[in-house]
Amino acid sequence: MSISWLTENIEFPEVIEKTIVEPWLAKVAEAHGKIPGKLTYILTDDEGILAINRKFLNHDYFTDIITFDYSKRGMVSGDIYISLETVATNAEQFGQNPIRELHRVLVHGLLHLCGIDDKGPGEREIMERHEDEALDMLAEML
Image (cartoon, rainbow, N blue to C red; front, top):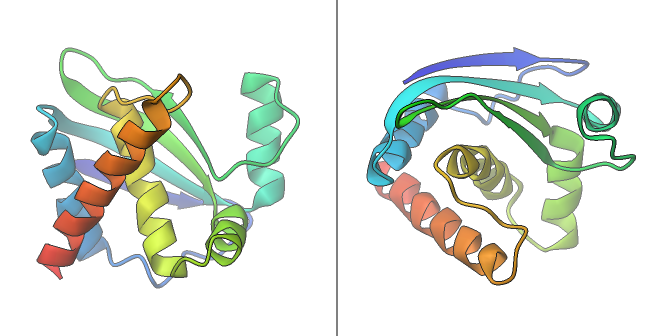
């Protein structure tokens, strides 16, 4: 898996250990029967993700993640925008460890590229189960 890490309006967070996170994400893709391809994670702030949300989705609200899927023939590929501000807010609001919440959002985007949705009836629970399984995989790698 080829992963590029970009930042907009923020510094790269030291809590993302690329030597652990990148093999983990590849393992998650493979566990879902996908070929790891090229991912670009763009880490930004709330204003940055709001601009993407308005420009591409015509949504006028903050979110933690927006995923653009370029996958073809079983190879996962895409651009994944993440607002670190919203991730931190969500961690605090839901009483989660901020690093675990960041890992959850990182894998959430990949899971979308693997074909798992979370908008329809019952889909959110399925996504959460896959997120939890992926986070368990990460814990085993640490």
